Image (tube, rainbow, N blue to C red):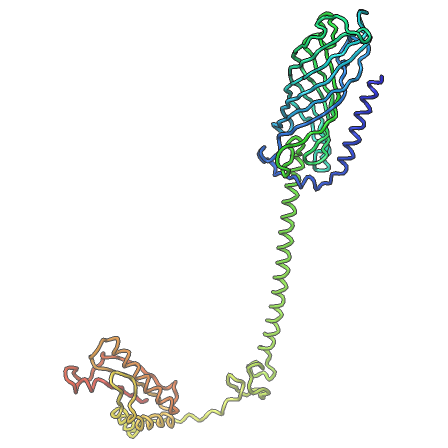
Length: 453
């Protein structure tokens, strides 16, 4: 009964301690050791070491008939190294050392107590993690587990009558023996790299020797309950594979993507709102500008912004600047007289250019001035046709003839003639009026013809 109370109090203490430690772990701890779902095993810490101590007893829940009525609780300690293969399975190498005691033999009276020194118990076990509890906190706070395997132990049993050793089967002999460990436990995550390990293991021996008393074919068993610490090895930035919660990791991944998407949506909304504000401002400016450019107070068809003569009376015709047009002059028919033709012929006869250029020589100006005055007075139209001889390329001659005709037009316009009533065309060497084989013929072909109409 006392043994059960001690074990119960030990278990309750461990659970309270683990619950308090777990309650202090915020949700952010899951994010701090976040690993993207379906990441390789190399993303986790898979190696760990542990140390523990606890009580050792010849009593186990699986025994039916014990060799001793009373099994004393004794001290044991050990260590292990573990390799986590998957989230739920790992391989663990254990070392244990301790002592067993008991008294009041169930059979015989030659001795009344025993003591066995367990010098070592080395085994290799498979550890199955049953679940990661507290998923609502996005991390595994506690992990129940079971383990089973096989190993080799070395122990030395002693039988006593009082405090005096008595002869017995293999009494005082160092014995090596195979055994099978079977255990359960519960781990509490103190921090990302440290776990509290609370467990209970039953070791099934391969003989009836470990308690020093041999009866029939019953194999001995012994158990130990332990409390220890497990330390994860590797980079602190990586979570432990055994304590990692893949479901919470997938939830975190979803949450992170959801937040990123929401941030993008918010940014797009802000950009759209800014763009809408700019468009509205532009539309308002355009509306104001349109109103300014289209307002026509006097109704003359010219917007006020361009109207240089505002307040024009209704019905008055205006020009592009909004000013009244001058009264139309009566249409007077004008005829080209012989005198007019003489003025033009004189201008043609006196017209000379610098050699190979479109520059008019000064002595040609007086006769051109009379042509300009004639165009002004009678509003005649004039066609200027430039021609060259065949000296030089066709392209150069065509350009020169056009430039000379344009030069005459520019001069006449500068003297007040209406540019819209003067046409300047160049024909190059295409329309000779004399032979180009003589100097005199070429001189005649270099000309600008004036056609008055």
